[in-house]
Image 1 (cartoon, each protein chain N blue to C red):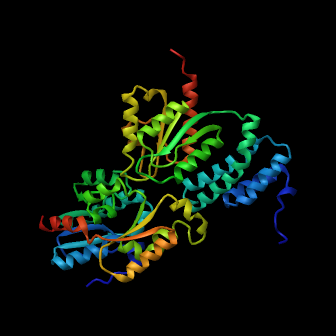
Image 2 (image 1 turned 45 degrees about the horizontal axis):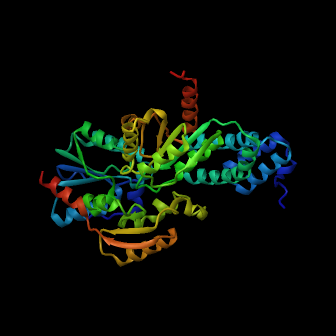
Image 3 (image 1 turned 180 degrees about the horizontal axis):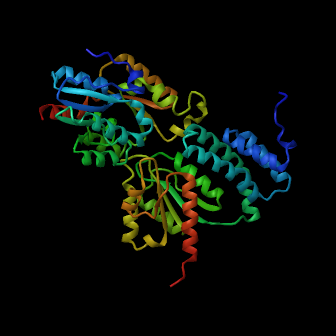
Length: 231
Length: 214
């Protein structure tokens, strides 16, 4: 064992949480899993471990990605580490009843197989307390609408990486309008070639440029929706 | 004859030679093909400036760099044509070109116009699990795919990137057995099936002929 090796179990809670932020940043999945297990063994509520250690750590990763300090490979490694921690916490969160922010159905549009951004958004939304039903890739309008009928979510999230597939988002939104269900959902869209103007033009509620923005936007829209008087 | 270095085309591009009255502003990834078409057709009145091909790693910068280049050159050429397709700019390059009064290539990207935009569009219904490489991208696979994706440092990420793809399609602009072998190796490294498809220069040749006659 190297002299300078950090023994996670010997750290205080505060030191451990900071170390976990560093380990997430470095994409160290095993260390994150170990850190989560230590926090739980010390009596931490699963929700606190999720938000203070994992989500706070991923928020730093997200900010540095936005600022051009980190790049996609590093974010993927961090996400993979967070996934390891989430796998431990998920059953505990269900058992202990964590606060629920709302529900989201999310998927990549028809003809598009890219899911890295969509997966990151789904994970960060779960971390923020949203229940997420992930439809995967290559989703037709029928698949989206069936999922909305089944899940009755607050939010529909659509993702596309290609200029050729992003117009399909409008097909989905237009179909929702035709069926008189558009205003029942908050529609968030994202993906590398999109921009705010495109989001507005297709009738989405918002374009989200990254996972952190998606979470903040979702929280704001859900809060607004819940504050709306029933008329 | 201009000697082209792919690393220079990737990192720095190619300056205009200031010979010819029509300037083509192109992606560095197209330099070989554009110069070959110029040579084959005797289009000496066309000049070529290439922006660094690595801009494709940051498509949000393409529109800005094209705009700068048009501003620098518009007073010294009778016409300028942009040899970029949309290339991940989400329609912003098209809007900017309209504003600047210059024309650009049709289609979403080079994979499409090399194959022919109509054919590519028709195929895209069933071929959306294909990962495409052109001659340039086969030669520059490590610089454009392997290293930027971090696969040299973290090969375990491969399936997070490519797990949903099924095959690599090498769109060959030229008949080059060495590139065929290299492209097969690229497919192996990505864990994908392999298909070589000869496209030639596709719509690029058609558009350049139109510009040359204009």
